[in-house]
Length: 251
Image (cartoon, rainbow, N blue to C red):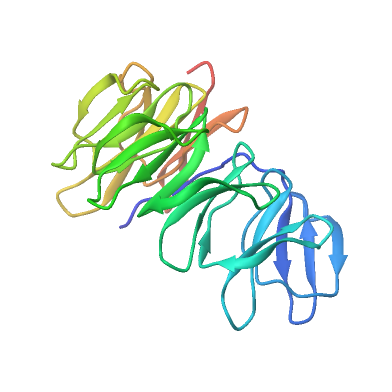
């Protein structure tokens, strides 16, 4: 069995529904917030008031406003959602940079890959395949040294070394949770991070860890949510038997 997790990132809580001739924006309860005749190929929710959209035919990416207006033209080959009023986008040369909500380039296109801004820093990858972090001015805040790098949350971000072993660092690059033996780790939410391990049969099991690196549950869930969303995280031991555990914010 392959394990599965749910991740709930911060959004403006509007979602895009596509039909052959129209697009709709709905809220989390399915209520239509806005309808417009022009069809946008968009699979993303709104962040910072904007959602990425794809131009039919060319496949280039721009951004639309919740009114349905295209506010940042189709000119990128790839784009991630906005976060902290900046978005990671890729140009036709295959390089990543960052734009603001007006479409202005604020960090130049020079990276092989780039993540989203979180707590003032964004993970970026150099030509040698190493990851580090830049601040909003584009200055290197944490040197290129990692084989993988996550988003900062609760002051921590996961990183992986050259052997694929994970740890968590703070915004200065200092290791706060030492090398971990998990198959995968995830961003912290409300002081809790989802972690996973592979069994001898290859199945993936999930559990929850606190910001000190201590397990709050056994790594035994087949399915799990990665964040509290203000209330609780849910781990499902068995979909067949319907056994679930709810981990509250009080742990």
